[in-house]
Length: 173
Image (cartoon, rainbow, N blue to C red):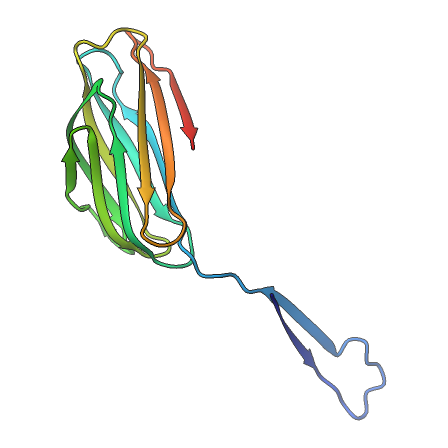
């Protein structure tokens, strides 16, 4: 519940008492992690045979450490994983991130424990298959999960295979 702190000051020769008392009320909030994840198409045109780069951002916006954080990028069959790079602020700038684990179409990074305010970016390079047809929807999903606390956040990015321009649709579920 709320925590109230009241302060009173008095003097034996003061005759006006209306301004010598004040209080401050604060609501005690639980300490908990709050992991977020976002994903978007950073570079490339989604055409057959083209390379694309997706950018994934992750952050602990909570007030406590998030334990056992894993970022998982599930690629649709229309994409072939090529490589990744990334960096993080934990609390200083680091131009490396943990090694990716690739299992078929699933690419994941075990970030370990992530303290409040820590965040980072992953750049995932993929190739659109040569058999992709114009108008195919590439639905690509990323998730961040934790062992304890809030953290099962997912974001789905949809783009259309095109001959020229890019149409993007972002959905957070």
